[in-house]
Image (tube, rainbow, N blue to C red; front, side, top):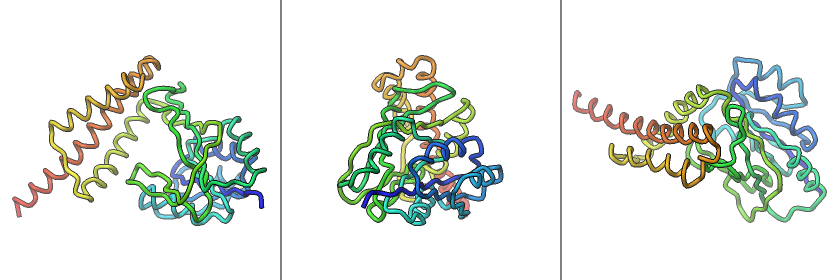
Length: 258
């Protein structure tokens, strides 16, 4: 039996992205499932212009929400996308060709190419950024540590040619907002599992992150965009671990004042 695909997407206030995402999967999807965290913009209205199943569910974490979407899919294969992603023309053609085969693997990965403030980024460790996104239903689940989710697959994986196009940040301010948002989630997760860090280690991790992105991963080849990404990636590291350290300091202060 040839493969059929359900596309699973989670959303929250994605009115500027969701149409592009949905348009890109029209040729390859037998079903589209959207699990929304009670958006307050036009996400639902735009989504319902397409043939989708739109479900609203309380957000308890990226991993949890993506697993809800995964379980709601009814086809043998599930393609998981973020709302700010879309399939390139090459990837659409590759998946159309793949659907005429009898796949032997339980999952398939693609490259992801990110657009940052209007520029395509091919260095800084951002490309090829291989992601497993197409999985056999029942053979994979979302895991990892929020907000860094990943598909955990039972069995072997393959690769399909073509890029997921990731429209990550439209402005520097978008990037800073996400650093703050993801930093809080990451710090809470690290605090929950008892991970600690020292002030000197925070500075070292920050410096190492910049060197890794700008020098080792050749971010300098992306020019000013590469420098900005590398600088803000280092700041994201500093922010995340500083928040974690603040949580421990605050907890110790509260214990002393009891």
